Length: 160
Image (cartoon, rainbow, N blue to C red; front, side, top):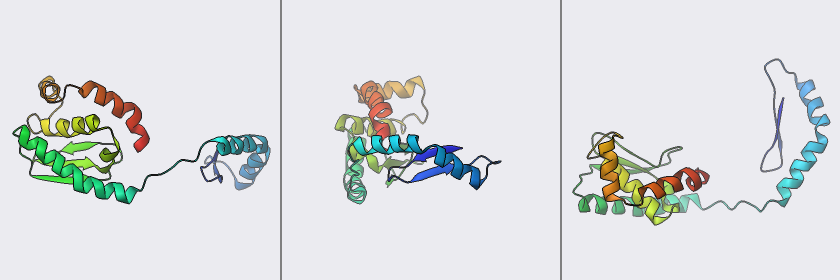
């Protein structure tokens, strides 16, 4: 049996395939002290403030395509289409046809990180793989790319 205290204070019990509801209820009863401790920890944590997702998505639609196309022009790269999506694990994507998809969450990252993601996708228009040659293009266009990648792997995960 797995017992979780959710953010709203409710309990979730996961039963194994062979488990029964009666055994799950008994498990919860025996776990009273643990539950109380978890609820106390939860109450001591500061409340999580969720950003206004709709406003951020609107901002992303307004800002990101313009930024991407300006960078594309500066680097002589053609882009056929830009779309903003709610990607669950990616910051961006580039298709062979020239469509670049960007995650709306990019409006929440530091500017140098956003620039890195945009340039990364644009460099895929030159080299549609992750070869050493591709990374040379990225390094030439974005000198802080190593730092930006580190930020995305560490701090960026909290935005998903």
